[in-house]
Length: 233
Image 1 (cartoon, rainbow, N blue to C red):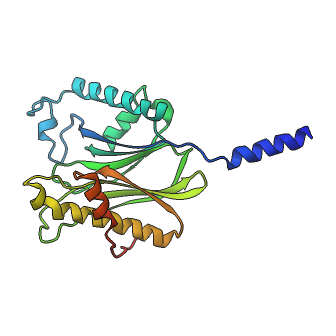
Image 2 (image 1 turned 180 degrees about the horizontal axis):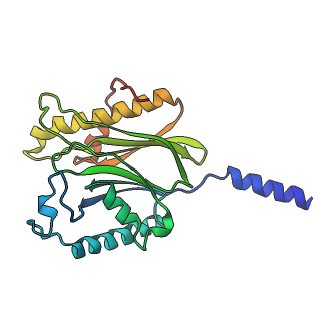
Image 3 (image 1 turned 30 degrees about the vertical axis):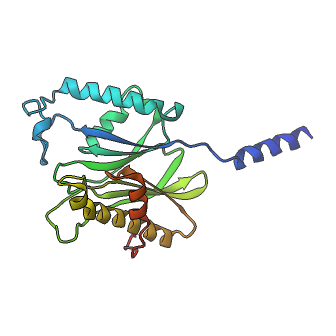
């Protein structure tokens, strides 16, 4: 009976839902100090922000510490915005506060005019990513406006297929009414990606997160508008 009891306990443990912390964090212009082919001039040592290696390292330490405390022991999945490139994320997860979390990275360069992107950090032993990608946000009648892509990852989380979508919608620059259609375009892109993933994986779940630059209720309304799924392989 002792052996049967042990089997029962193991079965209970295997069927108990896993508690997983999922978060989003706008890292607020996490740029390195290397001059690259983007609009990073103000985040260079000689730029307007006097962005020195010392200031960069100080920011990495502070942000990695905060992330490590989210949910008590750091999130298993965290979407991020306003990062310059994959390199700054590699520097971030290598910090003392995060090194033992063993994060992996989903990142794609976006066409954003400021040179910033969205990305996803995740613990592969918890969230087993099997696919990822990015979809550009096209603004109707304003093709010259380049903004952040919608980044997504698909993976197994506690035995279920879960998709994580991260967006950073256009700002209210010029006024809320003037810029509303731009955020609508971003919302529709995000919804289209979700619809496509639902089509590929019926019954799966989607987590949408990001800096939507909008009222929470309006954001929900925008993203609830039905769209036509786009092709995702």
